[in-house]
Length: 304
Image (cartoon, rainbow, N blue to C red; front, side, top):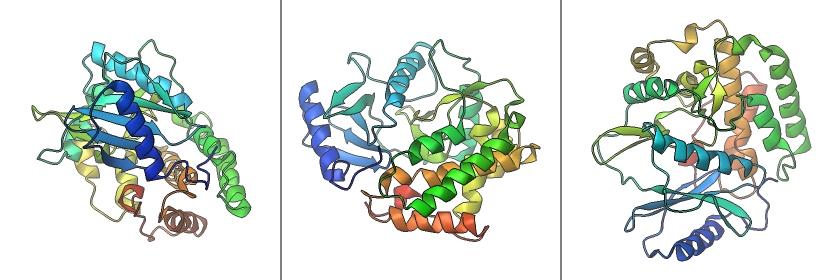
């Protein structure tokens, strides 16, 4: 189900749920601070060193159990990731929504770099495959799931996006699965890198983590460089990781899969987040018109 228009997924509603979760945990929440409001509402409790991450969707709730299981596994293998709080049974359900609780990492300089992202991905891809039921990389299936029951999406736009899904699925075929599947982050960009107090960078946000080809994790940076019209460091990423995804023969398919994700990601937020509808329209129109010069704006930078 996409975000309805009745205010269930607004910032105020998410704050109330976060407050109730903090009460259940028996921790103070006077300093409850919103960090992010996209497909998840992410709140920090700096005084007690916790982060509450609430999924703003019913259709994506199946991901939360996977994320909690991964968080526990990351601790056992000392993965270069943020840490799930160990002494709390997770995920937590509140008002029909699921949440996970993580250790809070306060912002500290220097800002994480693409070079660090490349090294993190090398380490992440070498972790091996955990004995956890993980989905295979399926960008088209993920997109279709977001389009199901999209209440605020016009029928014409939905029809175009479903046709795009069908077209990409047909062309993707087995071509993009030639390499042995790895544990891939699924949404690897610098915005999902934090820094520990000892200065070491770590990955966060594992909603899209799955088994897939390494190319998946090297795609967000060069696509972002083109679509957001900013230098995002693709060359540095290539040097740090040791492989250039844009030299891969299937690069156009990986790029298109990423762009589909970047457009469809807005669908659950159309009815509840100010500015998202306009940005969604910009992205969709540029794809329909094959306009590579249109500048996209990250959803996290839009007004809430």
